[in-house]
Image 1 (tube, rainbow, N blue to C red):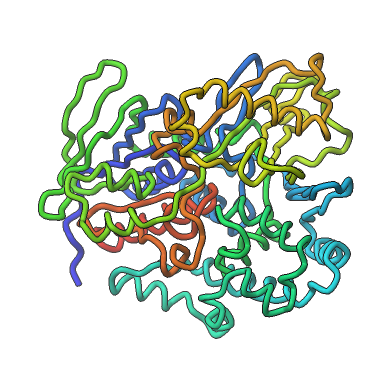
Image 2: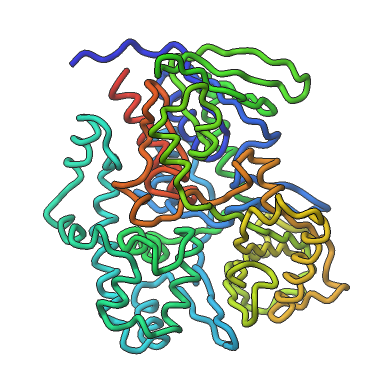
Length: 501
């Protein structure tokens, strides 16, 4: 079959990691690309900001896929730019359950992590063995670059090309949740195990164990171990954006920050261009485009389209409410940090949601010499999930924000020494903050919950019902995180190349 005429102009909406990766790869392959984003700094939820000598990661604080063969490693190799320097997180996370002083350490070494599982959760080995089996099969399948969900014959061919006999072990579990697996092994009454799984899976899937798709959970819980693993970037998360920006501009693409795309024009279900506003001058104009890639949420995409397909809009409208985040950014003296503190910790507290609906905090701590803090000081970032609606409906926003801030500091003070003499800078972000700086609808974070209805083969495709309009980011397969959105970007580029190459 002959290829379609190559697009003369491609517009990428959004300079998050997904959008930057898409633009960099397309420009490197010879396409003419323009990127527009309303923010001042590229990176989206993986960008940074500076205060009083501290560099704070806005949202994402750890990264997967830097190992040889990992998605970031592959992409940087193709682009011909250096892979960012990073150190492995070991443990990937130290999880503290209510009333416990010894953490559950998610070790990088697989054997050490297996010993930890058996010690912390006696009798659970059959469950973990199943998770390891599913992880190996799913990881190998994903490494062969399938397209999920498929939307045309080319997509189907890529999906079938990724299947091997070993992949079939996952098929019987396609419609299982983690809750189903716990019941199968008679572990549904193990509250401690379920609590741990709820905490970890909420970070990666946006939903707890009962509703998280088992195949997604196997990957989310298995990626922390060698030879994969989670990494702490030297400098900050901004390093990823900087490398991608350097690549795309080198290859002729243009990046326009401070420019908001206000509409995508799609008469007759065909993209023709976008309307843009320069937020500095308030000038507006329409930019023609043969193809548009939107690094936005599906909710934002429906709002941007002149004529959203009714079935697509209906599906988006039926989605369960997405989560928001309350984040506190602290600049502290080193004396506030306990000796041998892991880079990432998770705490679940007794009591009723003083801080957030699930009463937990995920904490990231800088390392000496990693470029995030002056000598003798450190950054401490703590986040909790929150219902976005309360932040938009309250008449006392500032009072609610201050209450959350003080409650978070009080909670953290049980592990860190956050006495006033150790606190140098305090700042907080709410869903309203994220909405303002990232333009994500209502300030939601992390994409769609990885339920059966929205993960993998049942999720939102990169191809949309509008011709020559693609969706990239954490609302598509394989989900959230810089590695996940980079996979989606790579998929979109391969689809565009197959159509126009």
